[in-house]
Each structure stands twice: as C-alpha cells, then as structure tokens.
Length: 119
Figure 1 (cartoon, rainbow, N blue to C red):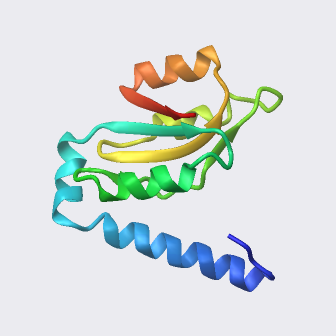
Figure 2: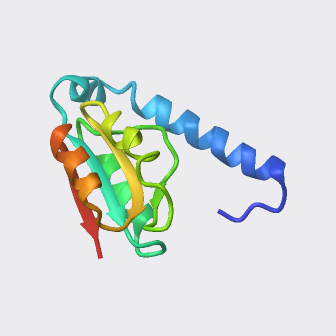
C-alpha cells in the first residue's frame, strides 16, 4: 500500500475492514466458526504474505481475524503480542512476520493454533 497522506491510509484500512467483515458473513465462513482451524500465516516481510492472504480468503471455513499483520522481532517484548495469537477463534487466520521463540510455539500449542510458514 502506497498512501500519499493520512486520508488515503485510513481509507485503505476502512475498505479492508469492510471486505473482511463482509467475507466473514458468507455461509461457509459461518460454518468455520464451529469447525474451522485456527491458523497463523507466518512469512518473511515482502516474501508473498499478500499472496498467502488472498489464497486463504478463497478457502472455505476460513476468514481473516481482522487484525493487522503481527510483527514480532527478538528485540521487542514478545509477551505483549502473545494474547493476539491466543485470541484467535475457530476458522480464523492471522498474518504475521515473526521469528522463532519458545513462548510463541507454546502459546500456539496450548490454543490449538496451526502455524504455516512461507519461505
């Protein structure tokens, strides 16, 4: 996204939220709220995150969680980001750029969250 000013930036995010909301109201996405998996789509920045997101938009039972891309680096406090992973509901996916850390894996395992890493 290339925004020249704050107005264009906010307009982009509002349209994105609207698209995510309307997508979640489809019949198969409603069924995903009961039986769908919880998935974190992890990748390196600029390595196909948007492609992976658009692929998961096409899958039945899956919907975007509505949150921005989760960025976790080793120098930032990881504990403040873990509730985002544990708050995923059935049938939701979350985009992320994060490095490996034991607490991330533990949180994902405790909450039955699957992690797909794109290289």
